[in-house]
Length: 365
Image (tube, rainbow, N blue to C red; front, side, top):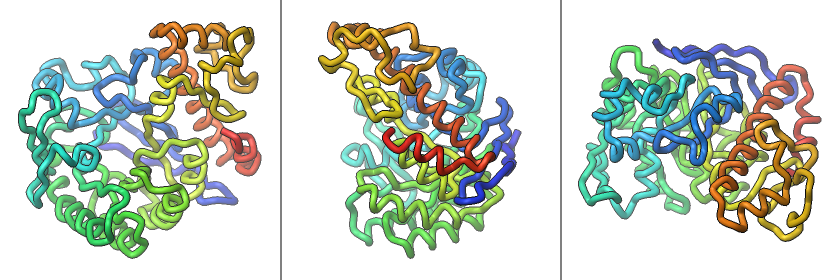
């Protein structure tokens, strides 16, 4: 079944939108945050944990799943939902990010990308057609087009080359769709306003089911990221979902929502958890710091969640200092609880007009 998008409300003081994406695996309330399950798992958690936290959409990665366990295994076992026992919606990145992050292990031409596997040295060819074919075999709800994501810093010429290749690949992605497969287009152009305008203008003419802003959060400073988001978001079709790829700082999410972005993903809440960092309304906390050694309460009384409230700050520090795996799990549960609450409160603020109070509440997060 193709996805549908319902625009439910717009913020009276910003461009923020409250919406709902309809998928064959249930609705996704937007603005939403997607926990990252690159290899079919959100690190340290089970699918039941992520579901219990209220998440409705999880991101996995086409490239990594193609390497291991391989598309044949996933297809044989009924698709990615069944393989990872995840009953809600799934989105897969196309492998475009790996074009940038694994630049020393790939060759790129206008035809596609050939990667040298970091596992065994074997070659994996990703073309727009192959990426869409893999995502269809995974049977996910939303597939991302294969694009070229340029790094930061890069020259204007490099950014334009990546954008034009992304544009040449866009129709090939769409032509490779199977049945009613939902595919999102990805706007590129680096930090250059004219390139972003060109890319948004061209891709908006194509029948994608949604649109993403790509090539941000790739190392550029915040003062360069924000203008790209402010410019690009309103250029994308109003009647379709808008996705800002890879952005996850709470302040960056709030800014992007105010520009009209509906969807986010980022490894930050799970990666920071594994490095003993917790998100709270008072700012990020080092859970392994000596100050928590005998602290019997929570790190922040205003950031206490059902999944972890029974455990003290002292106990979590003990787990980290002794290398216990439970520390990683509890910190991840805490951070994803924080993000789930952030997104729920964002959705409420858009509807009830309390945006200013919301931004004040999260000013230190």
